[in-house]
Image (cartoon, rainbow, N blue to C red):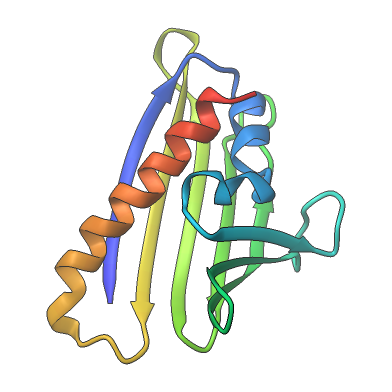
Length: 146
């Protein structure tokens, strides 16, 4: 099981950073051969299932996640979202936190615990570094793109 986290500080209002980060379909934009969907369609809420499908043809991996905490930011309170990974191969959780930062900026925190079935713990370090890179790149892209 790999655990990783990172923080970004951006010149956006917390509500705008939240909106950009929780447009689930856009999460696949920076990961090759990945498409992300949310069910039910429409506004995210507790119980929404987000699926990242990566692959082509018959070789496909689904990373299914259920939103278990959904607290958009509001005046004086940070935004927080927790996704529990429910797939047969990919397990764990991810948390996104959005809060006001210094100088009118917004601080975004991402924490994740990632467990890939059949992958020996010997690879946890590589998995953690890879996860931090891939998800960091995705978050950077989402925060830059309206």
